[in-house]
Amino acid sequence: MRILKSPRRHAATEKTRNVGKSKAESDLQDNALTGKLSAAGKRFAIVVSRFNAFITERLFQSAYDGLVRSGAKEKDIQLVRVPGAFEIPSAARTLAETGKYDAIICLGCLLRGDTAHYDVIVNEVTRGIGQSAQETGVPHAFGVLTCDTLEQAIDRAGLKMGNKGFEAALAAVEMASLKQAISRQPSAIRKKAISPQPSAISKTHRKKSATRKHRRSR
Image 1 (cartoon, rainbow, N blue to C red):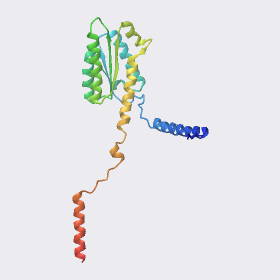
Image 2: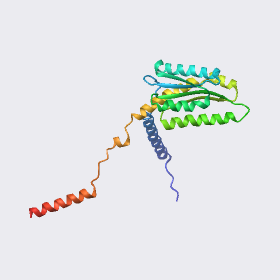
Image 3: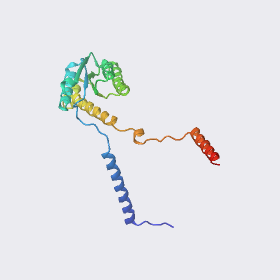
Image 4: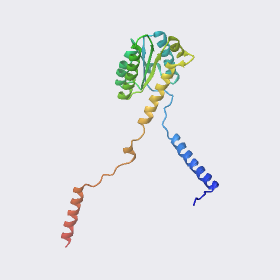
């Protein structure tokens, strides 16, 4: 025998579920940790490749502008120049390991050629920057252009596609702020103090003491 549910009751149940779900999602959104676009009081290093300087200088100028607009002071911005994109990860890691900077901005430009050299360099630069960020714990912003043509690079250095240097600077500011916010969160151990459990030896000692007192009283 089939039992048909009332459409009204079914609709009310679904509505209740949706309301509960929306409230849970709202609470989750309210408690979400996010970084702020405020660079005040933070220090940044910008690693710039000299190769394809026509492009990388535009990236640097916009990255610098992005930091200043976010509140960073000139004395808190360190510029480091390297020969090419391949040297960016090494310089970025050295800077991150000093502990002086809240974030590292990596800027470069790689253009595809007729050989496999482009693919090798792109993979190594990407892997090196990511590995440096993970192992040092210092945020690294990836502002290395990997384009097929010079026209594509120009578009991404201030023309049709915006400026990736400016975007990298904002990403660095936000990640530095987010890292600071996460580090201020109390750990699970601090939130819930774990009371020490009595050991088996202490239990036995208490039992013996109670027995002795009982004999003395007799």
